[in-house]
Image 1 (spheres, protein in one colour):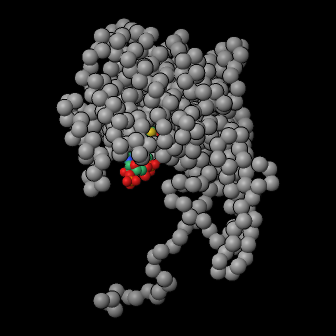
Image 2 (spheres, rainbow, N blue to C red; image 1 turned 180 degrees about the vertical axis):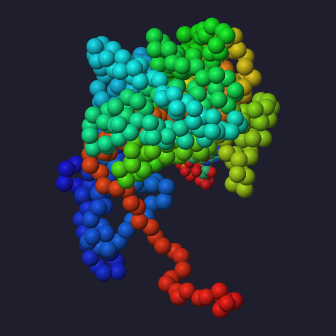
Image 3 (tube, rainbow, N blue to C red; image 1 turned 60 degrees about the vertical axis):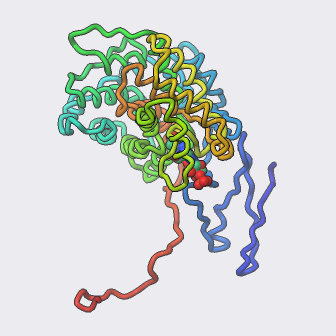
Length: 431
Ligand code: CMC
């Protein structure tokens, strides 16, 4: 498609310009509008970025109509079945799957960084006990820049790499500590002989008086949750990380901003909202009533875990997690879990209902992840924290791609609809 272009004519002046159309490896081509403001004196507007590519990227590809998700070209279902989270981290950050030696070296380096500075752990005590763990995550991840300022030169590739290792290695330790703090239990230090995911689960659940043991089926399911959430191209939190990082802020500050964006129920907070919704529905017999509410334009209620800005088909991550949900519940002898039955029934009815079919609203990644995490024993307010642990590799990889590509500061323009220029009136002369 080289040489394709879009002719744009300004009807006010009759002036025409030709904009290049660029085709990526896959996906719809994009129109390069960079010359519009210079040549026509016009800006473009697209609130919510429904038609706008914010950058070029080589990391993740989504075909929302077909329900395809690729990390560096590899299908998500293959990675979830055959790989492990740390290997996926290597793939995302380095661009290729590692050979055995490269993997072992990567694992050793990440493992070497799992502890956090003791004073950072002390900082948890400044938070209220009943703080949401995501509130703690936003603060503590940002605070990493106060502890690891020896590697904050963002223009130095080695510094960027060290920050990547530190973030991937320390985020489970911080996430587990945010939970332990909220329930008044002592922090559990990392145990480096364990895998990344088992180590995280141990830091979450172990108490000093008891031995920690967990079924490999549950560890595998959590590892899959990590893999499936590791990156998702230019979603709200990743775009936030890129925008914050484009000001040349340090990566810890940029990722702390991303954690804030992830928190909302329209993004990462949806898995927490799904479980709340399932508990509120309570029984299969109430499903039709809630489906009716979800379809009512005057009712703000939405089926949480349904619909996606990009997927207009079954989210491929939901397919993997539906199976993982079966595996985990079987392992725990909870095949008849009322929550799972309710979720299956909700999915069945919604996917046959004209409203959902017409609007192409299918279960997304959050629909089953909450049930799995709940069965493992993870409380609802930790679901989004776990999403942030997984997404950290995506954020740091996207940030690094942007910085090494020398992108300019992100500075959108606006369509101003406020008051025209007017003179200040002193208070005694105002009506
Ligand atoms: N339940 C009922 N109706 C819905 C839903 C839903 N879950 N999602 C979208 N719709 C309707 C919406 O009312 C609108 O109808 P109309 O055209 O009549 O106004 C239409 O479908 C299009 O919705 P939209 O809000 O314009 O779509 P969007 O692309 O802006 O929003 C979404 C995507 C994910 C925010 C939305 O589908 C939603 O709120 N879903 C529930 C929350 C959720 O599960 N979020 C997790 C997303 S996946 C995790 C992640 O990647 O972070």
